[in-house]
Image (cartoon, rainbow, N blue to C red; front, side):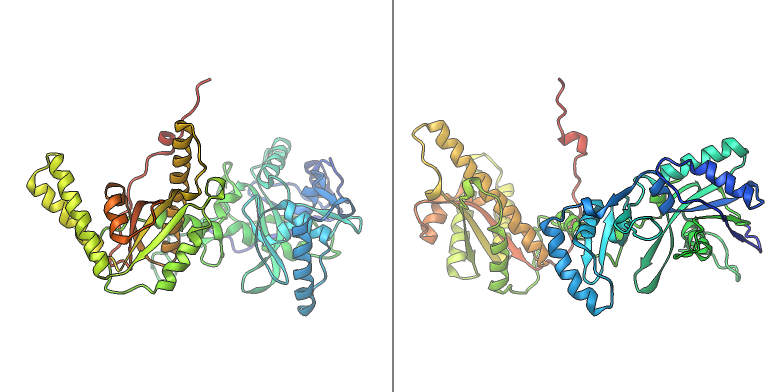
Length: 470
């Protein structure tokens, strides 16, 4: 990349107030002519978002918006904190418009930070009240800024035969910095980022991590000419910046992946990590006990799992290391040995299997037993319906078991779900003196992990989604 020593930033004057349906390329060509300019190969046109939104009819009248309960709740919180920071009040109607445009509310304190449907993290979902006629009229971000930029670029190319780039820009605030700067929200003809990795610096060292957000830099430069108040220059021509022309570009390439964003407090990311990081842990645990209140907190979360008729049929028994637990494990392992002998397994296999299971249960700092309490199941005279009700109970406690495993993962605890109690129900009930209506279903070995578990392979999505062939 050979940079030029001089870049010109030229504001196009005499741009009229834009109305819905206006022809932006035609207006732009007229403005170029009035300013004594013609397009050249390599020119970059930066266009303010506001005129694109107005042209596309992306406006709303606040008087026509009815705030929801959520909008009113945010309004009360924002208003109190905004006054402390000397910020203007946001009307509930405006907040509702923001909610309608936002994919997600990232955070709200004295300001409202959102993620738009485009993936931009910005204040107020990019909604703007400036530079538009009407006190109660607001502009919304264009639905597809890349598409708008592409359309303008192609029309201008057909008219002028010149290879140019189009950037649609808006003003965004930044973390850790005061003040808004020009930021690209749509592009055509120019790559959003300039990858300098592999290039040499002044001293011949190879650049390892340098990636330049060139379209944001160009938007910020154009903002110096556009201004934010009554300057009235929504279109800027940048000439002299040497870039590689590319017809297949999208603003999405400049958006940092959510999983790589260290500053975004994102519940969705955290949940994705939680779900994908959980493993069935069958290795040695750290020699560290678990406070009972931590286990109880996890079980408290597990009881919020869905259940048939909201029956909450799950019953948990926490087994600490004591003589009762040791005796139970020995009896269960003897039952396992007998069952394997009946299956015709070899002595070597039986010895290995029994010892491994025995050690997994013995070494767990905490052992949790999950039972199904049949007391609250619906009673039916019809055997088939009674069996289906029993299956509903099993599904219900399975959902609670899943919640428990995720709750343990949140506490940085490792666990494994064992179905051994299904094969030793009578032994467990007798040893622990459980109520008659309890049916032992699962054991969970729980402790602090010593080693990471290798990520297991997962089937491809097309293998687990069955497509109906109508």
